[in-house]
Image 1 (tube, rainbow, N blue to C red):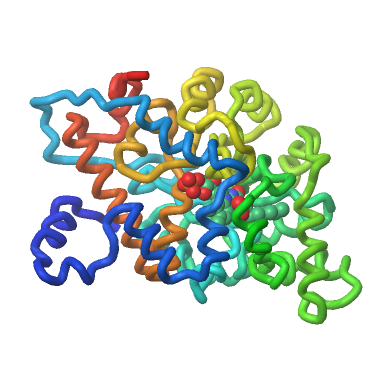
Image 2 (image 1 turned 60 degrees about the vertical axis):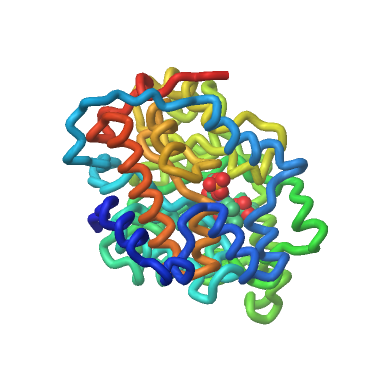
Length: 387
Ligand SMILES: Cc1cc2nc3c(=O)[nH]c(=O)nc-3n(C[C@H](O)[C@H](O)[C@H](O)COP(=O)(O)O)c2cc1C
Ligand SMILES: CCCCCCC(=O)C(=O)O
């Protein structure tokens, strides 16, 4: 999809009295509207963070330490935001992050962001804990680029089964999330006594898996809670080590990415263990409280990887300026999390498309006004650290 940022901007300016009826423009507006349409517990599940919320706040605040230093008198008539990732040309340096349990947000569940990303031409990273099974998501996406995120199960046969199913359904990369072998201390969810998996949300891939189902005493629909507890037990893989990552590496020839890296030494370990890409992430501050912001982690990780494999980044991206700062500090692309989750709750597939279109338009205008015509021209010289 081509997004004409100035046309998009002009259409909104010219909407006159209709403007109030349009979908939100800013992240804050999407968040406020999601709060209105969702019940307190599902809203709290998305909005919440671990502990005191230090990591989540820090992710967002970190962007203020860097300021864009524009160049002027550059020809910015033509602009190009496209990047190349694992052999695919992607129109914008944006992916949809894996976000599970989408049926708590919208009845279409993961089908809505999957279709939106297919229309936009950006990769969709489907969560292991999606409510809709991966085969159905693949069917809705045609040939569009999709990656599968894995919470590495304890059971090796279940691991193999998830990977084989993803390969058979046309997913073109596997993302192993390593920051969540235990669920963080999430006070909002604890106060609401809310864990959506226990009522079957987010269980699409487990409840449809032959290996998983054969490990149960009775079919998942006979005892949803027991089956969900078993799935969570598989995910609570507290003995997951680099050796287990090797096992996953041996199971697939697809590009393998590791998600949840914030330490440069772990980035080097991941490279040595054969990953093809690193996702610098702290899970949007939902796991470890008081942790380093991902933007602050990027420079040292970029330094240690030396361009050998792509580095992607998420956590705290809310605006076009954030995207440019992340790219300036070493990211090839960013993943968007909560912004699209809120948009999904407010307006389903249309909402997801809209929030991404606005982010793209803002990024493109920011790029141009800072004196660059291509995302390839963005490097450290774009920003200065001010505090
Ligand atoms: C409601 C919710 C569910 C999530 N589920 C997953 C998941 O299933 N797998 C995963 O790797 N990350 C998951 N994440 C983390 C996101 O992939 C991403 O790292 C994070 O949302 C980025 O931070 P941001 O929300 O501040 O943009 C989830 C995040 C949220 C908000
Ligand atoms: C063991 C799987 C827990 C997944 C929790 C989903 C998620 O990533 C999040 O809520 O954050």
